[in-house]
View (cartoon, rainbow, N blue to C red):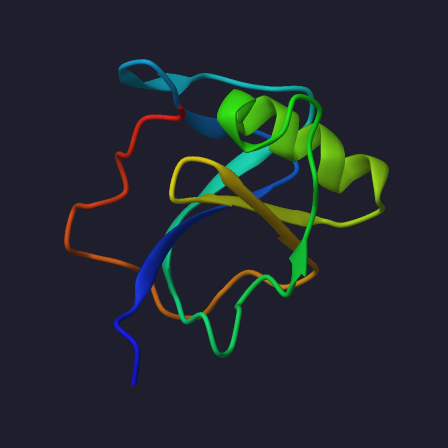
Amino acid sequence: MLPATRLLALVPSFLVVVKAAPSVLPSYNTWTSAGCYEDQVSARVLPHPVATNGGPSSMTVELCLDACFAAGYSVAGVEWSQECFCGYDIPSTPATDGRCNMECK
């Protein structure tokens, strides 16, 4: 079994932004932070990977949110600071080890 990775899940209303230096963005359009969750490569909690403008090296939480919103999803998450995933359900297992602070590249 592969080790769990971390995913920051967001839902429409307020969000946590992780870039250059991890920081909190009070709001972004209609999105709200739902926290940090466990994810498994073999069973993604947000099953739909979405490409963002500029590709992985230009990832920001805002780009991921915009891409998921444009595709009609209600939940978005950034993983490994450069991967964007979307879905409809908030994951069920919160990550509690404090590792959800990776800077976007």
